[in-house]
Amino acid sequence: MLADVAVAVLLVNYGLDPLLISLFAIVFIVVYFYVLYKRYHVEVVPESDIALFDDPDDLRILCRIYGLDDTGSEGALRKRLVGFARTNISRAFAWVAPKAVLGLGLAFEVQLPEGRPAAKQEDLLGKMLTDAGPGQGSEKGLFGGEARSSARLSGIISCPVCDTRAPRSGATCTECGADLEFYAVLSESKVGRRLLSAKSGSARRKLRYDVPYLGGNG
Image 1 (spheres, one colour):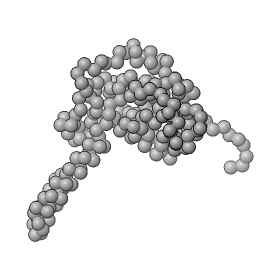
Image 2 (cartoon, rainbow, N blue to C red):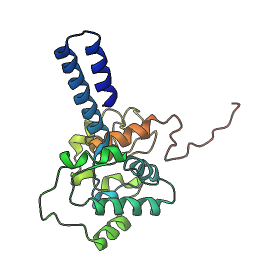
Image 3 (cartoon, rainbow, N blue to C red):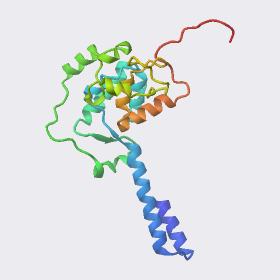
Image 4 (cartoon, one colour):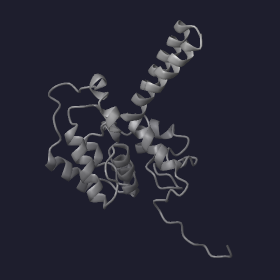
């Protein structure tokens, strides 16, 4: 912002139209704040939904998005995310980083309606224990409490994670093992789009299922 003001003053001193330069300076500042808003204002994944993520890579990416430590075991990652969700339980969105941006959040913060019931620790633990594995995607809940739908599943053309063509039947990607409907619903949220971008954009994204060695040279 200081650079923007300095450049504007310099251009005005060179004899350019002050009104036009001021307009461009204001537009620059508005765009700058919009970029900050889109980049650092992210949905808070509710405590109950954290239990739905059964891939440790997803948990690590979520920790990075929220500015949390992304090292450690799956249990440690989940514990950090649960702690973040409980800290921000009254918010639908949170400002994540850096500190200079966090101060802007007060003016834009979206508060959830009063009386939102907090997830009980016993319910969360039970959900984590009964959470379906990669081979039981049809039994696992969806992000945001959405219900599974055969119509939605049939409309998925490619895997949201690896972009492989979706199978004609089945809810699991044959290439990376991702739960197609889960990630399709997740991609409808801002935090989900960021997670999938990081997950699929990595050149060395590891498959969730090992590919058997078939032998041969090379």
